[in-house]
Length: 245
Length: 195
Image (cartoon, rainbow over all chains, first blue to last red; front, side, top):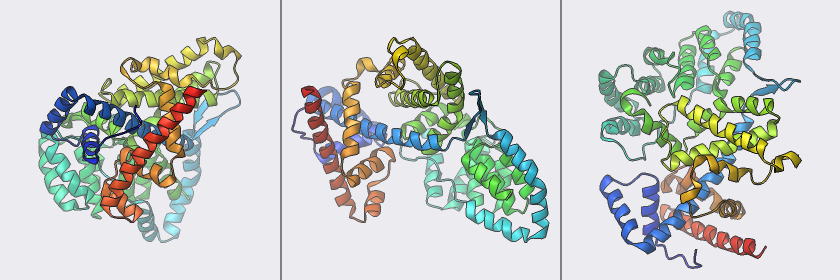
């Protein structure tokens, strides 16, 4: 690395777009050609790549420590590792009677609404910045609408795609989420329920969380508790604790 | 994403884009298994955390380099466990390990053995670690802007809003911060060579 770094901001932008998959196929080809033929550009790119990767890795290392703090693990005397599930099951069983009692004693409907409002924030959606394959273009176009909270427009596009792939977990998940974001819990349940047992799905945990919220909104917290028991994310645990308070 | 929406690319892209939900769920899902393995094999929690995090970084780098395109979550889990397991076995076999009480500094270098990445990289581990150090010593706003842009993939507009400045100023600031980081790195490497 020499002392001088003669990289222009335009060159840096090109490199960023390339690294983040924001170039069109044609631009990408041009960029790769330039790397092959222009040695000084290649040199600048290698330096840029090193800096960018260093920044990303540094940020990820900090994140990993944050993730670590969220892990609920208990160690027994013999060094055996156990998950908190058994404790949670106990907590649920011990509190179930209280929950049902509280449900009738207090203003259950009002409480459900409050819990829903407190815990519901729409799923932020998927990144739409990477290069898009042609078959995914419509999906991501709708994702942009979703992220801008244009849920109805997103739904129109996704429902067309769903007709071609009715079992697709991603589509069912986001269609459910769009309905829930519009306040229509009943409609959301129709879609989320289809994928609740799909344990291979990337959205498995989140499906349980949002489906539980939909049931809470519909005034069925018992159903929500059952769902939350089979979900081990932090969000699910927090919501479960709130329900069994 | 599965079925029609090209599962392989979706997982890889999400990892490449540092999507927090995915990274975190991979971490939370896999750590207990690695911890259990290391604790059962003469290790402890401190070692487990370090080994697991190095294995995680290794997985992430390998996917970013296009050398591993995971077809499913279980492929990711298996790969991560394998790296962590190999790293720990390697650690146990190492001569140095017999005489140490804490995690050795060269642990990080071992992680690259499994990823098969070191051969074609032009910067070595010392340089990479030096760069990460430099980032931590940059002024707070520089670190923040660089991480927001390159790691969190925030747009310049979003960054400008959070700093309450114009988008063009934010872009200039980011450019200057990259220059500062590079200069700090060169300075750091001079010192390393002197030592």
